[in-house]
Amino acid sequence: MANEASLTERLQLFMRGDSTVVEALLGEVLPKLHEIAVRELKRERYMAPVSKTELIHEVWISNLAKVERHRTVLKFV
Image (cartoon, rainbow, N blue to C red; front, top):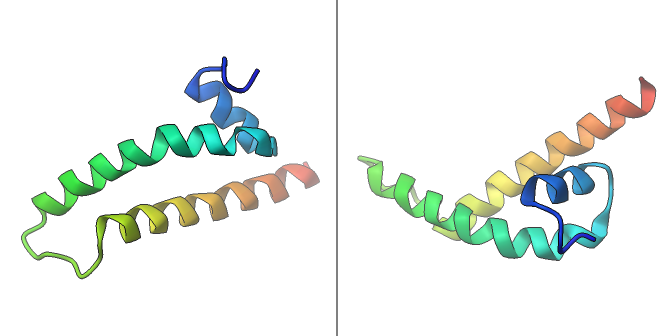
């Protein structure tokens, strides 16, 4: 089912703890995040001392932390 689901549906599955969709999500999301990082770094006046990959990883990790906090809150609701 995860391969047939839309990106939004797969993200929702991941948010609910379904780890089977992770590979498909990474394959679809990381190239787009890379494009965004390239575009944003080109717009910077001062070139930040981070690579596109580092920027993507930082965003991904910080968003995963937010998801985990959200899951923790939902457990108590």
